[in-house]
Amino acid sequence: MQDINDKPLLVLEGIEKSFGALKVLKGCSLSVSASETVVVIGPSGSGKSTLLRCMNLLEPIDNGVILFEDREISGERNDKHVVRKQIGMVFQGFELFQHLSAVENIMLAPVKVLGMSRADAHDIAVGLLRKVHIPDKAGAFPDELSGGQQQRVAIARALAMKPKVMLYDEPTSALDPEMIREVLDVMAELSAEGMTSVVVTHEIGFARSAANRIVFMDGGEIVENKFTEEFFSGAVGGRARRFLDQILH
Amino acid sequence: MSLELVLEYMVSPAFVEGALMTLLLTLCSIVCGVAVGLVIALLQDTKTKIGQALTTLYLWLFRGTPVLFQIIFIYNVLPSFGIRLSAFVSGVLALSLNEGAYMAEIVRSGLQAVKTGQRVAGLALGMTRGQVLRFIVIPQAARIVLPPMGNQLIGMLKLSALVSVIAVQDLLLVANQIASANFRYFEALTAAGIYYLAMTTVFMMLQMALERALDPKARRKTRKWTLTQRLLSVSNEVATR
Ligand SMILES: Nc1ncnc2c1ncn2[C@@H]1O[C@H](COP(=O)(O)OP(=O)(O)OP(=O)(O)O)[C@@H](O)[C@H]1O
Ligand SMILES: [Mg+2]
Image (tube, rainbow over all chains, first blue to last red; front, side, top):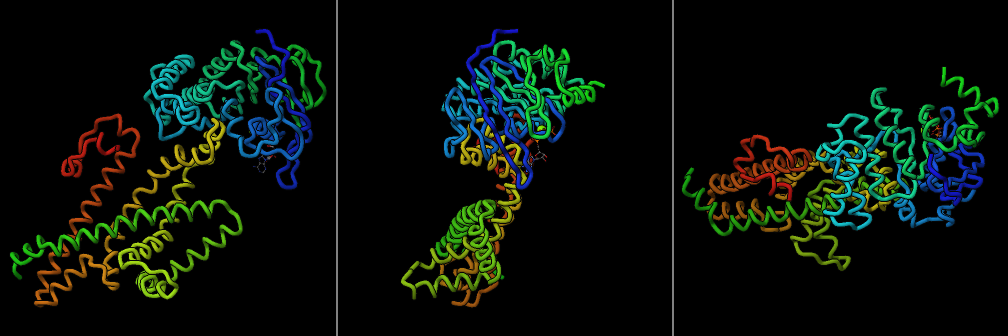
C-alpha cells in the first residue's frame, strides 16, 4: 500500500443534514488525507450516499463545516461548480450522457468547463479509455456498452477533469457479478497510484485489499472509523460486527 | 377550371410574395413560440409560487381564448395603450404567444424525459446549471420534442392564414383578393392550396431529415438513404449542421 500523506485533503466536521423532519446525518466528522482510500460501509438508509453528496456540495448541509485543501467550501453559494471541477464522482447508475459516444462523454467537461481544445481533450480521452482497459470502445454509445464498460467510461469521464479526489457511490451495485471485478480492478489501480478516493460499497473484498481506512455508518452517524487491518481484525463494536456478519454470510 | 390560369397565378409576383410572407410568418412565430415555451417550461420547473402563478395565468389566458381573438386583440387594442405595432409584428406576436402556451407542454415533456441523474452527473463534473441545460439536457430533450414540434410547425403554417384578418398580405389574403377581382376562386384557391401543400410537404421531409440527424448514431453509420432523403438530397454531413 502506498504512503499516505498526513495532510488532510477533505475534512468534514459535524455535518448535519435533514430531509424535512428526517435527520439523515447527525453530526458526521471525517478527514480524508491525500492519496488515501476510504471505504464507507453501512446498512441501507444509513446516510452514506448523502454524506458523499455533501462532499461535492450536491447536497446542501444544515450544520457543520467542509474543508477542501484547508479552504472552507461549505459556505459556497454561487461557486459550487468551481469546487466540483476538482472532485470526481461516479454513480451507481453510471449516468453516461446518452447522446454522446464514450469518447465524447469523456471530452465534454474538459472542453466546456476547462476550455481545453477538442484535440487535446480527445488525446486525454483516448488515453483514459486505455487506462480503464477499453481502448477500442471510443466510438461506442452508452447503450452499446455493457454495464461494466459503461461504469469504466464513467470513471474515465471523471478522471478527465484531473480531480484531486474521486467519490464513488456504490459503483458496482448495478452490475452483473461477472462485471464487478473489472470495475473494482480499475478503482484499485487508481487507488494504488495514489488517487484519493472515498468509496461507498458493499464489496468487502475490495475494502480489505484497497482501502486504507474503513468508515462504518449507521443511522446517520459514523460509528467506526478505523484502519483497514484494525477494522477487520475484529476491533469493532457490536453494530459494525452485526453488519459484517450479515453481509459476509 | 383553367390549369393555365392556376400556373399563371402561381408564378405571379403577388402569389410568390404571399407564399413568402406565409413562410416568414410561420418561421418567425414558431421560433419565438419555442422560446416562449422554453421560458414557461423553465419557470414551471422552478416550482416557485410566483413562477407557478405567472405560468398558470399565461396558459389560462392563451389557451382559453381563440387565436383569432388574440390576433385581433393585439392588433387593435394595444395601440390604445400607445403600443403601435405593424400588422406583421402583431401577427407574429399573437401567433408566438399562443404557440408558446402549447409549446411549453412539449418542452416540459422533453426536459422531464432527461432523468435527474444526467443533470447531477453534469453538475458533478463542474458544469454550471446553464451548461448542464445547454450541453446535456437540451440535446437529449431535442430528440424527444422534435416530432411534436414538427407537427406544431405544420399547424403553424395553417394557423398563419388567420392573420389575413388584420390585412397581412399572406398567401390566403392574396389569393382571396385576386379571386374576388374576377371571381376565378377555383383557380386562385387551387394555386394557394398547392403552395400550402408544397410547404407542408417540405416541412415534413425536413422534420424526418432532422430527426435522423439528431440521432447520434446516424452521424457515424452510413445507412441507406430513404426516399425522402433522396428527394431532399441532404447528406448526413449537411443535416448535422
Ligand atoms: N432527496 C431526499 N429526500 C428525502 N429523503 C431522502 C433524500 N435522499 C435520501 N433520503 C433519505 O435519507 C436517508 C439516507 O439516505 P442515503 O441515500 O444517504 O442512504 P444510503 O446509506 O446511501 O443507503 P443505500 O445503501 O440504500 O444507498 C434515507 O432514509 C433516505 O430515504
Ligand atoms: Mg446510497
